Figure 1 (cartoon, rainbow, N blue to C red):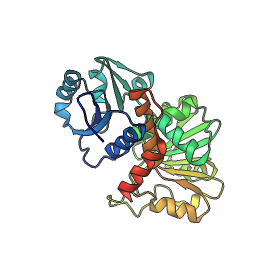
Figure 2 (figure 1 turned 180 degrees about the vertical axis):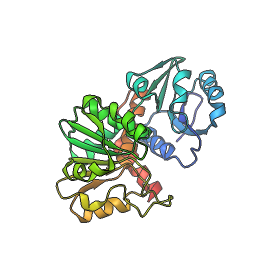
Figure 3 (figure 1 turned 135 degrees about the vertical axis):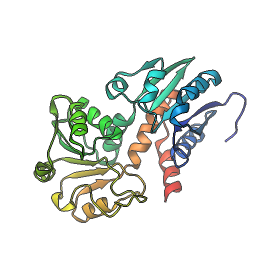
Figure 4 (figure 1 turned 90 degrees about the vertical axis):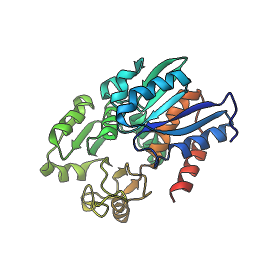
Length: 281
């Protein structure tokens, strides 16, 4: 990578961001595409967000990825936000269009891209169970609704958040009680874990978001966790013959959508995945 006076700068803004895989993935993409762009990490405390956005404008930084805790608060600091970002009240990608900052949310559609890539599934008319109601879950639920999923059930520890997230799917979205979850899980075409349960650095790494014995061959499961590549939950599901995928593809495909928004080019997905795997394995 050669940096010149005309290099376009983009980066990820959040707190913390030192652990982020985005610089590895997107710099690999820029290198493969042979374009004069570079991607950095900007660790920004919440009370400095407004100052940071002023800096983006002043320095003419070409774009941003946005991660926690800024996805919501950044919305009011931008000139324009996409329809999905308005509904979700969250932005994860910013484009600096000649001084006009435009916000987008690529998470949900990135998930659908990843799902199609990994499994070939089209969610239209499918029965889907989403465990969790955080930012990623909300984006996915919204995209599931837009893509025509037939039944989107959400289960969450905090019921109010679960009800609110389920509404994003439109008329096919609903929150279900813990007691109804086993029956729904057994019938679901797709089960998504959008909670931290199973992450290598959490105390809950040996617990399961849903008991594996509720699922069987013919069903599909996705865990949004990408480190480890395969969680204990996914490993148990695979033993039962369930097709199961981790969250790395979603990370790559949402980044690929950001790449396209910034550069106008299709992202080199193979190079992005190879770089990510090299970093985390």
